Each structure stands twice: as C-alpha cells, then as structure tokens.
Amino acid sequence: MRTQSENTARVVVIGAGMAGARLAARVPGVTVVGEEPHAPYNRVLLAEVLAGRYEPDVIALPPAEVRRGVRVVRIDRAERRVLCDDGGVIGYGRLVLATGSNPVLPPLRGLGRTLPDGVHPFRTLDDCLALRAAVRPGVRAVVIGGGLLGVSAARALAECGAQVVLAQQGEHLMERQLDAEAAGMLRRHLEALGVEVHTECRVRGLRCTDGDTPAVRAVELADGYELEAELTVLACGVRPRTGLAKAAGLEVRKGVVVDDELRTSDPYIHAVGDCAEHDGTVYGLAGAALDQADVLAEVLAGRPAGYGGTRALTRLTLRSPSVAPAPSGAAVASGTSGGLDLAAFGDSRPMPGDDVVRLADATRGAYRTVVVRGDRLAGGVLFGDLAAVGTLARTWQDDEPLPADMSLLHLLTNDGGF
Ligand SMILES: Cc1cc2nc3c(=O)[nH]c(=O)nc-3n(C[C@H](O)[C@H](O)[C@H](O)COP(=O)(O)OP(=O)(O)OC[C@H]3O[C@@H](n4cnc5c(N)ncnc54)[C@H](O)[C@@H]3O)c2cc1C
Image (tube, rainbow, N blue to C red; front, side):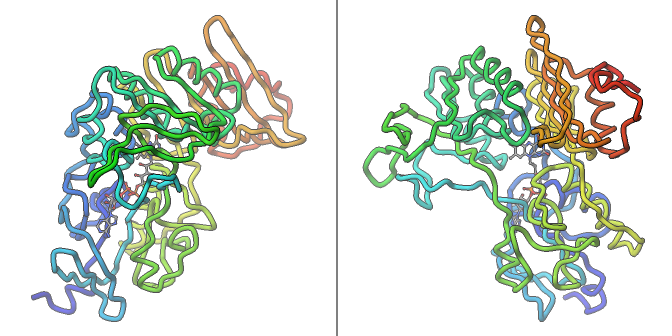
C-alpha cells in the first residue's frame, strides 16, 4: 500500500514506445506501463527486422523498468489513478500519456474490425514478426499505401523474395516528402528490385475466402482490376491514440492538446509523442517524440523548459546499419541502402514566388533540389548522393537567412556553399 505522499510525487507514464522509453531514461523512479510484451525498441528500424537484417534485440532501446504487457484502460482524474487491464490500480502525482498512434484501417470492402488472415498492419514489433513469419520467396504481396511506411515495407518484402505490388493512391510515391522527380527515381529503384508500383491507384476492397477464418485472396482496385494477394500490408497512415484522454474528458482535437510544457487541459496530466498535438501540429515523427520527452523531463524535474516545435530529422534506414536514426534535429526523411540514398527535408513543394535550384545527373542517378522562400531555405530533396545533406538540413533547421550575395547554386555543392 502506497502512501499519499509517494503518490503525489509519482510520475506514471502510459506507453513504453519511443517517447515513454526516453522519459524512463531521463526521469528517475518513473513508473512505465506498456501494452506491448517486448522491451522498448526503436520503431523506426522495424523495416530492418522485416527484411531480416536485424534481430529484434538489435533494435532494443536502453533497458527501462516497464510493466510490460499491461494496458491502461481508464484514467480516474478525480482520484488521480489509472486502472489497468490486469486489475492493477496505480496512483499518480503526474501522469504522462505516451500512447503513440494506431495504423489507419482504410474503409475497404471486406475489411472489418478483425483483420482477415494475411492482412497485416505495420506498426509494432509483433506486426513485423507476424509479417516476417508469413513472407517466403515467391509469395504474392500487395502493399496498400506508398508513403514512407509503404515504401519501406515493400522494399523489405521484396528483399525477402516476395512478389510485391505497391498500390499508391496519390500521383507519386512519398508525396509528403518528395517532389515528382525524386519520387520517379525512387520508383525506378523499387522497380529494379522487382516491386511493381501502381500510382493513382485506388484500392476498393479485399476479396477473401469464405468461412469462419477468412483469408485474403485478392485486392480489388476501383477500376475493377484485381491484384492477386496472399499477403496484404496496410500502410495507409496513422491516427493518434487518444481514446483514454477523450474518455477522461481531456481536450482532444487531432491529438491530445498540450501547451509548451506538454501539459494537457488537466494540469496533472501531460502528453508527448505521436498522441500529442502541440500548437496545432501532430508530428508523428520519432524526432519530435524524443524532443518532447526531453523537454518534459526538464519540466518534471522543476527546471524551466518549454517546447517550441521540432524540425524533426526523420531517417528511413533501409540497409546501412551505420545510419542510425538521429535522436532529434531538423525535419528530414531519408533512406539509405545499397543503391538507395534519399533525403528530404522541410517543404520541397515550391509555392509561387519561390526560387527552385535543381541539379540532376542522370548517369550517376543523382538529383538535388532545394526550395528557397524569401531569404530562407524552405526544403529540399537529395537523391543518390547525400554529401550535402548535413549542411543543408542544419541551415534549414536553424532557419537563418541565407547570405544575400550567395549564388543559390552553391546550396547544391557538397559544403552547401558555406
Ligand atoms: C515501420 C515504421 C517506420 C517508421 N519510420 C520512421 C522514420 O523513419 N522516421 C521517423 O521520424 N518516424 C518514423 N516512424 C514513426 C515513429 O516510430 C513514431 O513517430 C514514434 O514511434 C512515436 O513515438 P511514441 O512514443 O509517441 O509512440 P510509439 O512508439 O508508438 O509508442 C506508443 C506505445 O504506447 C503503447 N500504448 C498505447 N496505449 C496504451 C495503453 N492504454 N496502455 C499501455 N500502453 C499503451 C503502445 O502499445 C506503444 O508501445 C516509423 C514508424 C513505423 C511504424
């Protein structure tokens, strides 16, 4: 039985993902409750596990005390305690929601609340291990969604010998990060690996076997065409996990609304990572989750700190183990793997009045483009040769004015013109 004073000081974190584990490392004595059965791991590296390059223990995060395999089912704000699915009740002085996000299940015919056999989301280590167990050379796999997640899943499955079709509803791959030209290069790269890429391709439904345990057989497209499928991966985006917060009456818009001290509408409850909405933004990126956890650790220690947003460095690491995800930084999406090197940061879609500087070397498969808005770097894409990415991303992250007398072409040289 805990005393009231222990409870008053006690920090309880719901969720042992990237933000929760970071808090556990920064806040002494914190109690972390995590629904997943595994020790905390680096979610960004799951495609590596799927491709069979890493075993799960390689992507483990620094060890943390976690009540594993336990889900918090209710927050009792009046009594300041949380109720768990194993019957446990934990009192808190401060509560932190680090519940992450859930994969979006698209409204497809044949897809109910229970997924048919062969249909896999791609969010957790268990999702990844289930997919890895199901994939074998020659298996027909359809990946629905051509964003960062879908591209990395398609590539990993192709590396395992699957016959992969990637169905992307948008005009080109990785629309959030890449311009059309870089997306075209990525597409050619995937096609060289044997992935069949369909863009502007809307999936309408799944065709499954009859019976008590239906299994996917084909993916139906809007034009009536059917893609044969023994495996289907859903990579259609994510949605913040806000159910607990909503049920507890906290303010929730897209995510759980937090202020600069990551505090929700209840002063005793904070939220960080994918589930949190700060200044109208839900980041959905590892860099932001870690930045927020770092700021909250300071706030909980009583030191002055404030979160002002993240220009998050996102790294999609497909092969090279030497390119580990950066803990935080500027907003960059990048992929590296024998033959595939790409990085994108900021807003690389030009607006009227922007300057666009582009350098393409078709022979070497290299491409660089940056967008300059006023006197600032707004974003860029590099493909094939990332030598300039560090300087460019730093310039963008620092949001410093570019030197007035500098030719913009220098931005594309390896030292970024500095
Ligand atoms: C395959 C993949 C690749 C990615 N690649 C990149 C990338 O290249 N770059 C990038 O920036 N981001 C990437 N991301 C996104 C990144 O992983 C997330 O932004 C990051 O994990 C967010 O951290 P989080 O702690 O907020 O959420 P999560 O890491 O999702 O952790 C949330 C945890 O809370 C647990 N939980 C939820 N509800 C409860 C409850 N009620 N009780 C107990 N536990 C609960 C969940 O089970 C989960 O373990 C990728 C994601 C995936 C899936």
